[in-house]
Length: 275
Image (cartoon, rainbow, N blue to C red; front, side):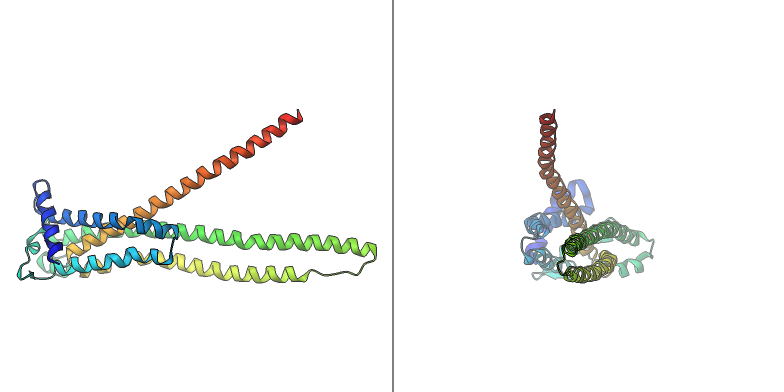
């Protein structure tokens, strides 16, 4: 932990000429960004679904950093010496203070209370952004599941229609009639299973995005420095996922364009040959 406190203190000294007493708070934000940059390859692999473990590693690797941050701004001594980080502030609020202590110093709208309200507002904005994106992703997944469920049903209907035509033709020819009931039953089972899956996805899509607001509860009980870490890493996670999704969509658009151009060229070639 002494290594962490030394690193944050040195970053704070570098930023002090510009940010004065809030330099250490900015150093915590910068330290969090450096941690997330180091974990970006794992986050990218998790987004692509490379391995099942990849999705858990970025979260698990951040837990020790968060606990070190928590203890660094909760301990009066570090390495047998007085903890110098406890004297640093973000505006009027000490980085080691908690919301309950800020309420006791001046109330909800006191100097320290306003700092925590600003932190809570930033976390709420990030959580709302995450919730909106989560609901959209759930809606897209539900549409994809519905389309996947409709495809076998349509294929079964077409197969059933073909079987009916064959049966009619066989009847005219005097052959015994054979029913194709198996396809219809299979389609019914697929439709039932897909309906259950869609219902589960709909419920999860309504609940999971709300979990991002749980960060507000954590920020209310941990030191202000740990709250800064939480809002920074949460904002990074949402922005990182949005960027990766954007790049994925752009890559899909580029891959679809050559196919569309080839189709247009084949149509143009057919028209010209007919002329």
